[in-house]
Length: 303
Image (cartoon, rainbow, N blue to C red; front, side, top):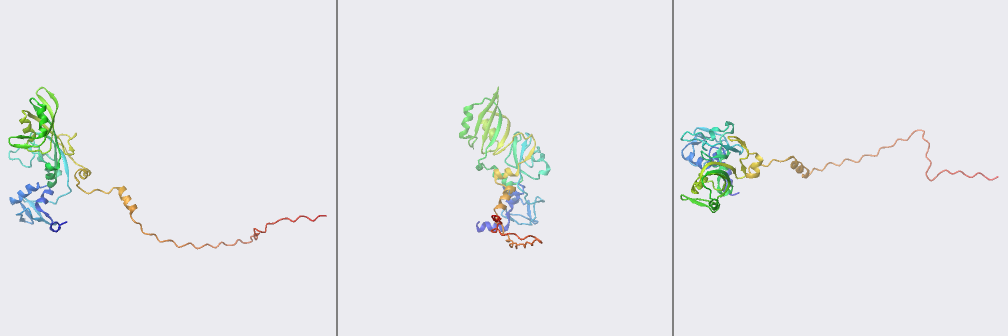
């Protein structure tokens, strides 16, 4: 580790990152809160996101105390249509976060689904993790089932694999295929990596298709599956370790037994040799005849 890294470790953690890990907001939104003077450290306003948080510091946002980050948690949520993915909506529309169980605590979303979209929405209490999972550089795909109204040109769908520019916005390669068709309605499977704002709807409109239903079925390795609409389910810690490298690997009993067996054992003290026990002589016992003196009868003398 560099000297700068060691110094940063001694000083604690930058407050914008600390707030993101605490689930207050993404790091970028945390920096905005700091710029607006809404963050305080030990009662004093924080003026720069380069401020470090040390053990024992008291942090508050908009007058509300913020606890240190707990273990990183990730949830799968089946978002219904008709909810906006935001903590506060200026128009007063119902929000995803207003419908979540209160015992979940404060969480942020990984990306968004618009008002009329439904399906898989990932939620986490770690803003840094949310930002990491949103980056197109991680290569994770977003998979959708899309119902469209209009005439589907399969050649035009295949052409989306080369990318497309719509109203000056460049979209990367999109995999799109026709699943079924009934009259003027059709179901498509659409897979993309960038997930720009309203990307599926705008690209379909560019092809002359109106999206009438949009369901996200997978985000990277996480799938919607049979999760009921409106339900929330936490991703198991071992899945976070396997998929994201988050959390410590627990020691299995077998591994602990093997480690104990492989560890050098202290030499045990050698026992002193036992002294031979004296065999008491039996009383009134007849003397034994030597082996070499086997008795033989002498022949009787001849007459």
